[in-house]
Length: 357
Length: 281
Image (cartoon, rainbow over all chains, first blue to last red; front, side):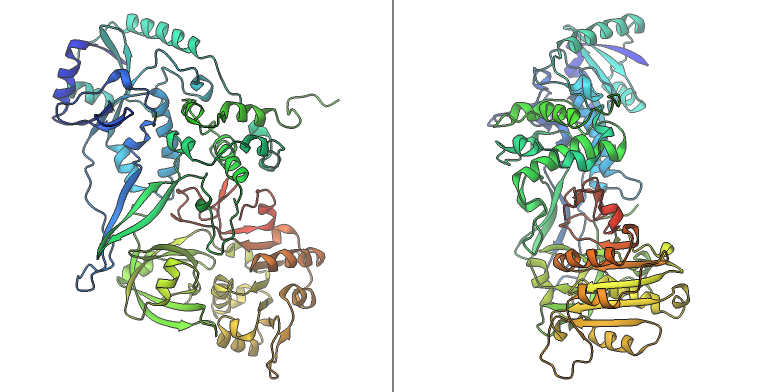
């Protein structure tokens, strides 16, 4: 694995050089917007590496909040009347600079949903395949970060092509994939670092960052409990008591992938588009008959936690659908904490490890 | 791999009123591109998304049988935006269908078995597909006794009435048509709710006898205990579910009943399978 040293004075130059072959995406705070977010950068714009901890996750890079799937005309005089056409979109190479390791890990979870043996969502997959993820390790985890206990972590390499570690005057870049090597070449960052020394420096910073993470979740016992026992557990009304079903948790979450499909016409033309949706909303599951299988807020809150912490775990046998970024904990207006819910679920009922007496 | 969200263009070939109150209509579609019909190769029990540009898509069970070539057929209840618009469309109009989606009834397992079909009201579409499929001369020898118990509130609300009365005349299928009530003095068939007729007419449970049950929740609620009393084990009671859907391919996340998705892992489940789910349908 190659280690490269990038002097910060060469940073913007390298980014600019890479623009010949890559479109750049990175964290920026734009005029008129309250929050920094991951956006495609304009020609002379550079990522604000100090703003990488965005309120919304970086999932929108491959999974925009609104995305046109098809265009159509309903003009009966047109030979294309009522035929759906996928509009051309730019799937040329994109480099996502400064994505946090937990967000990159989350994108791999989304991949399980959108790239399956049976079906491939072409919008998600085409965008994903165009991306090279140049991540930035987390030196100062937030107080709500519990990523180390979810299989991610502040220096996790999952889903990344390059991991950048900030060494004050320079970045150490750990090149993880061929895609990552190609990007480093395009940026002209080719100065090899002493691999052994660099690995030691990174390891030291990693240990220090991990030591700053003070909260964790355990789900070791959840896998061995039945879906129905957890579903019928007595704590759901309590968990959902303060929930206002605002959906903030699902919007800030890097692993929430549910979406809606809607048509919108203006005159005789229109679009069919995909929108982020949320299991917090009654309309999400409302039948045409008026019946709603998840008709109460408790049922909807339970669906979110059961999906993340049990259904996903059972379905893929690859951990929970949560990377521990802590965004939902920070953004929830009524202080619902997924760490507490996970603990309730893990502890619920008879301990599967207890000895029979 | 093709775009799974892109419907095949189809033309409406024929629209007929399916019930006397006209709340359901049956649509026959013909594929604009003959090769699409081959790609849309389906089995009885699957569904499709009907797409009306400008309004959206609706998931509807396929009512035609794979043995019927040259068209596909759907019977649609007028309930919302898309279905109301669809009810006003006419022969010759172009729209789209996407599919086939979901699993089918377990035909490989059902071969060589007695089949008891129990249906109520509008939920007879994929059951019609199944009956036509099984009665096809090439397929009929693969199944033993076939019983059909089908009821509606009154005779005018029975779907596919002409076919029902034709099947009634045949000796290779036992039809038990029923209505909740009727003032027609010439009504020749049963009167009574589906669970009651099931109790009276369904064959005894047997290791080779499978029930396929589709109907409104109230019918299901009272029919399942009857089948249990008759001794049907839960893995020989097959049901088809409905839930709100968008993508139909297991991605949009709304139709789950626990970890199973009705659109992709279903819509067909055995009662034994459903017993392990939260049954959020």
